[in-house]
Amino acid sequence: MRLLLAEDEGSLARAIIAILKKNNYEAEAVNNGIDALDYLSSGVYDAAILDIMMPGMDGVTVLQRARERGLKLPILMLTAKSEVSDVVLGLDSGANDYLTKPFAVQELLARIRAMTRSGTQQTTPRLSLGNITLDQISFELSSPFGSFKLASKEYQMMEMLLSNPKALISAERFLEKIWNCERDVSVNVVWVYISYLRKKLAALHATIQIKATRNAGYSLEEIA
Image (cartoon, rainbow, N blue to C red; front, top):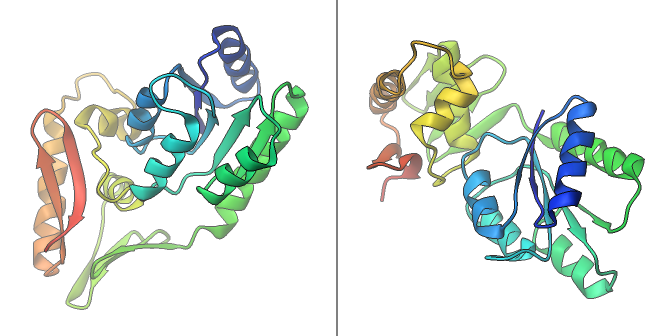
């Protein structure tokens, strides 16, 4: 499981990352809200831990914008404040849980387990946008006009796009998540698989499209 930590206090961030890695999580850290939102939008993380007070953009704003972009990953908020208003604002903005600093290591790990377990239980076996549905069990991409069984990498790319509608996902992120940065694999392979998916969407008369943004990445959007 891959986690993103957004925490501007360097010593605390290093300690949390060390704890997460020791407990078999893949973890990366950023120290400001702007980078946090950018990293979350890549679609490669399974859950996130956001500090409320950060430079650039506070954690609650990051959370709100992530939810507005359709990002559904579990998010735990960290706060040095214990006021009810901060807790309520975070939860109302889409946080799955919160933890007040200072905290015990075992409590942090327990809350991560709880929110990711809850997120797994609530996940449906299908992802949908427009008239397109992706069955996460059979790997079948379908519309009212037909269906295709996707190859493994086609499925993984489509799953990333459908899980994060309108979010830009760079070619490098696809390579990192799906090809695990294999040697001798270039970004051109991403374009090839995008082409495969576009042809299937066209054949299904999809009301969604894979949009390319020059030097930025790909996003899935409904056709106006």
